[in-house]
Image (cartoon, rainbow, N blue to C red):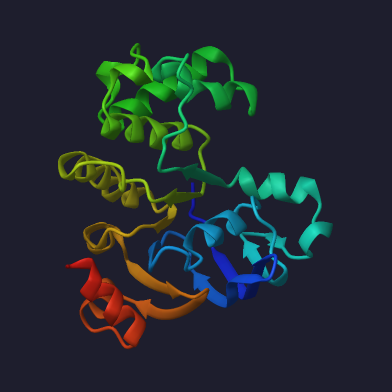
Length: 249
């Protein structure tokens, strides 16, 4: 399935008196892998939530494929639902169902959201689990596998819905270096599918290895936007330079 073009125009998001996103404008072509870096509280996770309608923007607009997310609280639930079906989302804390096996976790949404027959859902799930290196663990429960394996199952679960875009929120931050490498390897392999990938991370190694393009988000504003080598080695803004210096302390 083709990737998902995304456009953000002057997006602002507030929580009470705090402005979290302050006039963000971005163009993300279909199939591009974009990694968003920056300090905690800079708006990275909020931006992901706005992209799939978990948070509604106060000003500006977001275009996801043929769908427009504009209008704030007046936005129709049907439109939000349509956008969410275009994205898979993977979280830092995995969010697997503990009472279901690996295979059951992956087939749950295709069966109950898309009404996919169980036999077909299992067939597709096994193909995806093989791709992410989890084919030998389909009958295990989340408590019986490692953090890196849980994250790979979470990615498989997202892919089972055949999304056109994948949103990843700090998915390697709770993992040790070996497990991080396993998850990054899966994401790099997925780039060949030309899904639109948008990932938030504090991990500069993740950005270097996965991104076609790196965005530096500070104080709710885009201060850096370019190839990984440019942003991470030759940053233009003082905020990005300070962030990089602290990352290596």
